[in-house]
Image (cartoon, rainbow, N blue to C red; front, side, top):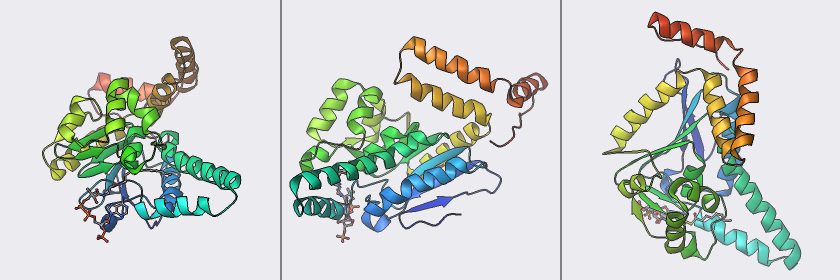
Length: 275
Ligand SMILES: CC/C=C\C=C\CC(=O)SCCNC(=O)CCNC(=O)[C@H](O)C(C)(C)COP(=O)(O)OP(=O)(O)OC[C@H]1O[C@@H](n2cnc3c(N)ncnc32)[C@H](O)[C@@H]1OP(=O)(O)O
């Protein structure tokens, strides 16, 4: 398995198509360092290309999911931009922000579904990450905050673009302007997470079951569902329908359809080839 400073990839069961990706700086509460922004897209690309991996579960090591951007890096970023010609410094900072955005968008670029399993704090950059994930679950006592406004930052890694589509425009505006903390239970009420669980252990067990279930489905149908749903956010109904028609014209000829129908008729579990 690939080795990283800020992440860890674990395949708990060698026969499983579920891979766990951990934010792995527990002593810093999984704060997002510059190294994280280099490693995260690499790890997702590795999992995307790994034919054994059908589903990715993203969690935080230790007591929290993620404490947001590493505050030490934030200082050095603004320090650097003060030291050069203002125009050049601004242009460099713009590039750096765009590279960090790309690192988060790598979740969407990964063809396989990424499930966020959130416990403890999920703050600032943590929200950027989970709003890019395909499914979100958390513990009831998880603690969320779109914290950027309190650090004099306009959130710039995706929350302001993705959160309104998940929780609605008004709620997204309220959360982003106040930076207030809210619990896992409230996150479920507003639709940010699909389900809450009583403890980290229950969360882990339930997410494993859900991930295994998705991982046992036709990998082509699963990546197709992610691709078509993501595309539907960007295009109108007619374009979306056209896209899925073209997609399925390419994919319905696979063996998976035959196997899924045969398994249904024979009342057995289907088996599908790797991607
Ligand atoms: C270009 C800009 C791009 C992106 C911008 C994103 C903006 C954001 O992400 S805004 C959010 C920034 N994050 C925060 O404000 C959260 C700060 N942390 C906390 O509130 C708490 O640490 C906690 C997550 C609620 C966890 O509390 P607790 O379990 O009590 O741990 P602590 O004792 O507070 O922390 C232990 C240790 O970790 C260090 N640490 C925590 N968070 C960060 C962080 N974000 N960056 C750097 N370091 C962090 C904390 O300082 C402690 O260090 P010690 O040396 O052990 O004291």
